[in-house]
Structures are given as structure tokens and as C-alpha cells.
View 1: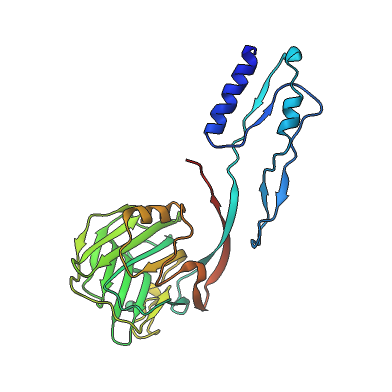
View 2 (view 1 turned 45 degrees about the vertical axis):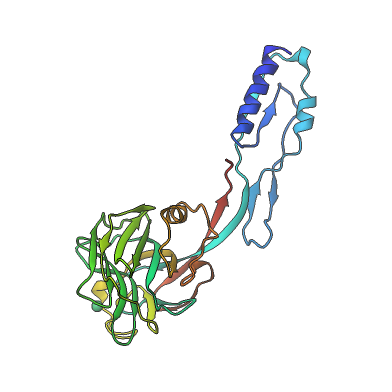
Length: 295
Ligand SMILES: [Ca+2]
């Protein structure tokens, strides 16, 4: 076995160890090629291109040791595109006191703990109060999340006494934002792109009450009413999930990194979301692809 073949085998093994498909074109020819086919994944409504490699044997047969003068090695690391997911993005194009989306939860929001996550982007200035999530009963603002001048805030059954975390303001690049709270200790934290803030103690011993309305886009000062244009949300919101427990750091990091698109909130599940749009909210359907990686 000459040194060229050994080098090729070494490159091949390194590439395979890296978990990619390797196309090896051993010599100049006018016959060897790989045709890439188009596959329609079952149940998916999009068209994807997936490499279908069937010619490796032919390529190796083309290699004649005594004629090997020039070696071309092409390493194509092609991750397998195994599945695609459609994702709704709610786009709030302008300040209004009419546009909002009402979400229907999977279960009542009588909560002693929660994790609430979303992906959100906005160009609104942070010297303005901007509602990010509102859950209001007939009686009170039960669970509200805001962007305010100082950062992001959580308010439980109050519009005046919240807990605020100093964080950079929203921008046109979406961030993955979560807030976690649990009644036993009152431990509260925000999570930005998978990273937790320091904990703060808020509303220890409290319970969130059921029978409210969940809305995105507006802050209701009464049940589904009394909106204020200057507090409305402008931008895009997607991937809203809510759990009745505090998720672990690893799970939140996975959500941020799209590593587990099977993770679904048991209170709000964006993958099977039931919602009703009022006013000027654009519901954009985005296709996202889960990329399998090898370990
Ligand atoms: Ca208000």
C-alpha cells in the first residue's frame, strides 16, 4: 500500500470519526460523480435536500493503484436532515391598543411554580414599559412579564410590586427568554439564551390563581380590556412554552439551543398551541430543521 492510499484511508477514518458522510474522489476521471437526490420527508410539508450516497463502491472501483498520479479528496460533512418542524411566529407590526393573541392553556394556571419561556425580538426603546406576557383574572394582574427601563420584570398579582433583573434590552435579534419561580422559597430567576441570572426571592408562599386570560401583545387593565398603546408589544414572539414546575438548567439550555425540539410545555405548548388573534398580528409560519449530531 503506497503512501497516497495510506493518507487517503487516514483522512477517511478521521472524517468518519467526525460523523460526516465522506465522498472520496480518488483520481481524475470523466466518469465518477455522485448524484444528490431530493427527498420529501414523510408528514412534512417542506422540500429538503438530503444527500443520498450510493456510489461509494463505484468510486473505489475507479481507483487503480498503478495509475494514481493525482489525488483529489473531497470531504463533505453532511449532517442528516431528519425532521422539520413548523413554527408559528407572531409578528406585531406596530403600536396599537387593539392587537393581541389570546392563548388557551393545556391546564388551569393554579401554580405553585412555573417556567415560562419564549423567543422574542423587538426594536422598542427600553425607556418604555413593554408587555411581554400577560395573564390576568377578573380581579388582578396575576402573572405579567415586562421589559422596563431597568431590565426584565415579573409581577405576580400586582402591577406595582414586581421583581426586576438588570439585563440588556431586547433587539432585532431574538433572544430566548425564560423566567422561573417557585413558591416554596420564592426563588426567581430570568434566563437569557440558556444562562441564568442570579436568584432573587419574590412572593414566597404565593400561588398563581386559575381562570384568567393569557395574552401576548397587550397589557389588560381589566379582563381582556383597557389596553394601553404605549405599553403594547411591537416585534416578534415565538416558542412560548410554560410548565408548572421549574425546569433544570440543562433543559433550559437545550431549549435555547433547539437541541430537543420534543420538549413541550405542559401548561402552554407552542407545538400544539390553541390561540385566537385579534387585530393586526401577522401569524408567520417558519420551518425549522432538527439537525442530528453524532457524539
Ligand atoms: Ca396597563
